[in-house]
Length: 141
Image (cartoon, rainbow, N blue to C red; front, side):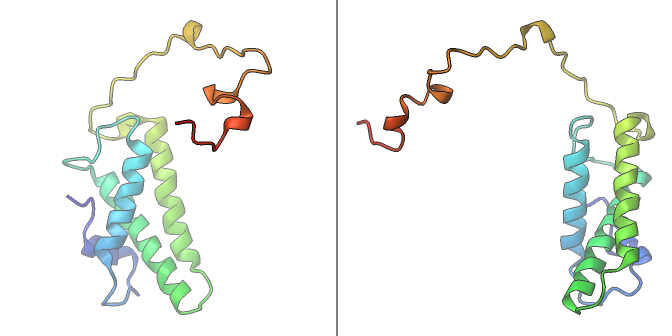
């Protein structure tokens, strides 16, 4: 389920052409939202909050307007850039304060820092167990 609709996007992109690929821009926006929030939440959201819907609509409108202005050789739209910045800022707010959303926060895996060590062997050892350098790229069968 998409986080926003064509009508949601049109609220921010009144000058959008009728033939615009709203679904594509919404999918791009939703993918970015999921990518940014997947460390804290199970995504995609089954029932996204209003904030997520708004972020999706603003991002999609920003992507649409940037593409429109780029295709028509016009100066980049400051408005499109501001929509994307607002959406990114909201995502940062969510990452800093997951309680802004009603979704349940994922349980974070704890890291045992004592066991997170990198062992460096002698400087003549081949990198990543790749064998001697002279055999790299050679079929060893």
